[in-house]
Length: 359
Image (cartoon, rainbow, N blue to C red; front, side, top):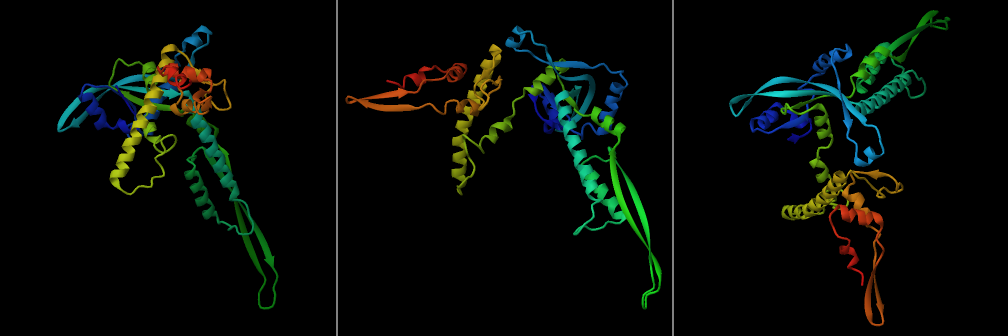
């Protein structure tokens, strides 16, 4: 099965994978599933006519031993559609399963981001009322345009409602020299904002929902969500070129051949990092274990998905000392910690690759 992001969700890509008798799983973008279509799909959920299935995070062996409860990750439902597309001039047809998923963590993050945007929008609107040196006094029309721009910028139009208040002052001027007596009217428009509770509630309940597509009709909602969460991101490996320990950037080469050669050389290191990380994670997963002692400042924190960089830092302070004693040269290796030995064991490497250096 091919698992990818929304870029893989184009109809042509899905048609090709289905035509080659393979399977795909990917989220659909707003192009494939517009906001109006998503709202239509969720309407039965709000009316409690659509039954939702719950997705749980699988427990490790250690968690099962301690009798810990399963953690809920998401909820959702599935339905099937018939897809048609042209591929190399040939029209093909296949059945596709749509998975409408509500991720609790994703919804929580989106709500926090929404609250931040609302707060920023209301602060910016309140600042429009401030008068003082260097601040232009806006007319009613100018104020409305500025407010509309703020609401559009923070994507809170309809959630944040505004009210305009205009005060008119009449000033009577007495006659003075050549200036006759006159009456001047001055208007001052201010704006206030508040959150529409119903619009906010309707927006929040739609957060965290996303539609996924797969041509594997036997795939359950639980399997799909867990598979997508556990997918391998190829881009992360390429991102390692920019930082430690590979450090491709900054690049001080002009020759194309040398640039290619350097990248190919570093790709060997990248493969080793990926293989090392994969081996340790697989061993931890097979044993239902976690590794602790690799987080700086938090030695008790454990993880089942350590990165290669984090594990390599655990070996940073190993020292090999050369001592000359009575004409003989001896090598003394600093004692290995329990974490270092555990990492070597998980990676399938013998401790002797270090211990044999002593002597």
